[in-house]
Image (cartoon, rainbow, N blue to C red; front, side):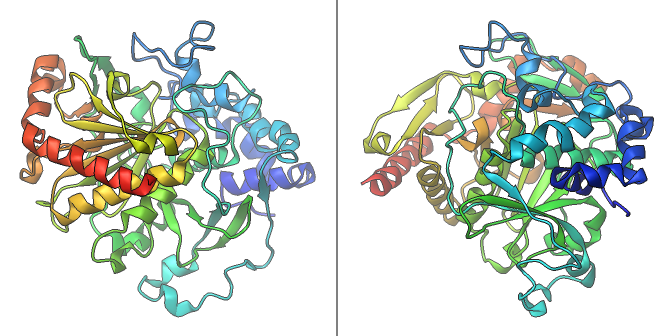
Length: 474
């Protein structure tokens, strides 16, 4: 029995311990040093999910006083006993996550795992012509397929508050981290981002600076050629018709899937691209579907370290990247700690709370859901679609397990001065040691203010937001 990836091993261990006991390959992988942090490329035994980079973090009234700050964001905090090897965990802990502790949890969870033999899956009826616009490698590749349930809910998500420790890590979070670690182990990640020097820049807001001279531009040059990145493909996600989510260990890529692709030049741990297969067919990316899919991913992962980003800049070729990016941050981003000035309206009756950031140099609006993720997705996507039609530059940040979206409003400059979503959020990557050492809050405040939409334009967008939210809520 040959196991092609750590993730497939995880899934099969979920299905039964006998698989593990009869597979020498798995025993070698999980119980020896070959699965340890050095082999994975994280030689210092520290990842972004466990290192402490900020001095002032308050997250969750019930837990913040009793738990170390870095622990609130670590996988072991949200996942029970074990941590991944690169987080300092013993390989046996990964075995625990794969088939020990979680095996019992699965029986009572809302997620089911299905095993398909000889390539059979529920998508076998799809016509080959539906994938004809991609080269043969993408049609033939077999990866894990995570199928969402039919409803978008936040039943297990508490907006804005990190829950107290529980003995459960979501299956999607386990799959995500294990697959990314597997690619790092195979050498597909160019460097260990967790060893990059990181500092909190002194000042009122506490911007984060990272020195990374190896980092390259974080974009996919041609979405249509994702087949060239088949080794970087981690898994894909699709919408399902069943109530509960399902994980298919190995299947061909469905035609309507969203691919999760490892970024070889990460800005933080677990950095990926989330690319819809059919996005190239749309005149403009249908943000409603893309936003809904990434919100479902965040809600299913149930890890407050997980953040997703989206950039739209009309001056760039094509205007937009056509996909989200996502990664894990050990602590809340600086923008998440900025006070909000609430904007009242009928949308609050639907569980949507809109706010304006106070004292932040870049004009920013916040949208929070308290019980209705679908309405949140609809409101934000309609606003962004209008901004795209008007060719207005903006960025999105998804946080708090998908229950909060930040909308950053920029003026449209040429590409060299356009800010990425994580820069808008207060996280800056410096390729130069001199720039890193000389970075101050004043220079960053000036940079954000220079790229910000002016006051008149911001007021117009606020009126648009209120009109859209009011219409949807009524």
